[in-house]
Image (cartoon, rainbow, N blue to C red; front, side, top):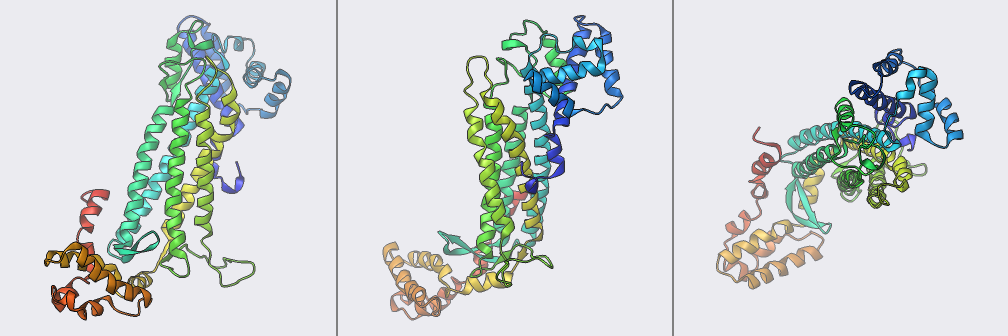
Length: 438
């Protein structure tokens, strides 16, 4: 985790003290359930919760010092708690194995991280919707292969991003549900030394569902799906970031990142206003996607368990969630403050002498009885003249001067095919599909 790309709320989830607090709650709830079943004395669970009620400080350094000797993090934690609680602490961890604590804790952390990411997505969706409505009918050029195609609106671009991130939200909701499972099943997952009712109790208290079958670990296909989902969300972040970067190029300049007072774009060139935020988002997206592959490789563990997944998850769980949280927050800021230039959009639309209306003329000629092959030839030969003039010639005027074209279409019929508003007649339908009737 790089502090430069981290926000406090998400970072807190992954701090050692937060992890140890979750470990304690898992152990205490399990002891509580064991006491209800008569396996351990009720005084054992009471002693744990009484100590917890004092709001004790978790001494991370002391636990680390014990681990330096034991070479086992869960044992080190249990040893430290026992030193604080006293004799009754010996009933902790009855019938449990380390993975019961570690995997259930990771499920809690990933669920909490998901809640933050879902809130991030809601904030971003609100910003995208607001800006889409603002520019619902702001004409701009649509591009395919980076080349002028046909007119769209800037609102449509943002509506497309809204729909994409709305799908991202649905995927994350599903991934959260899949990752939020509890396993308190003991060594190799047979419940030989612990009653399944303990697992059910801990799951309820920790806001999780019961893992239907664990080996000694929660199956890692769940984690693979979770981190793959984060990777898809990161790709959607990058797609919108790249769009904004292209629009900010000097030759285009239809939109750009907000440039704050006092901000400087280059140490050498005082005139520069660079798309540094969206470039940064492109890089962060690469990192989040990169965590998906090791998560998938974690699925194939040996037999009932090994710990080849452990070191991987200690890296990727904090880094992927922290980085994506930061990226979504940054993208929201970019969208919220994005500078949009409708006049430049119109100028770019008009730059190529009406070439963007070529399809309408093609279709009109076919409807007037000209074969598609001949219609394409007629429109293209005039369009290429405009292209080669760099937009200095007018496609409309060239078509009016072409005898083969005017044999099928009158001047007024040709002119009608250059109506910009024609392209926007179904904007309301698209917006209703994306945002609903209201």
